[in-house]
Image: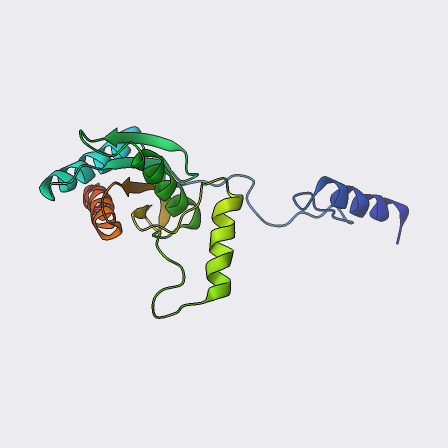
Length: 180
């Protein structure tokens, strides 16, 4: 191996997996910038929140509702009158988890597919994440044009009720974005 190539490999290893050494200075044919990335706006987050609030009222439930962006960062939040304060954080965690795993939250080992090792792994992942990961039902990703743009999490009712409220919020945005 030539000295220059060796140094490039060592540098790449030292800087981490994001640094790539190219012996002949060739670059892959990847774009330097991702274009046409769909993003959730404040108006969209508010629309999800309002529709979820309407569904909760229709079901006569008092819940906490969090809407996050695609990275799991809080974008909009509402605590309904009478909603349990302890469910505030739960709603945020459900939304964050749904955004980051890119699917609805819920038990990973289902009743049909009970796996003790997987169950323990999920519990450990929740612990290691500092409480930012959950398998509780009620987190639903917001998907527009095949891209996850955020998620909504609901806490304060049963898991099924939380999920129903979250889905109502997502459905309202999907209906609106289909018109645009």
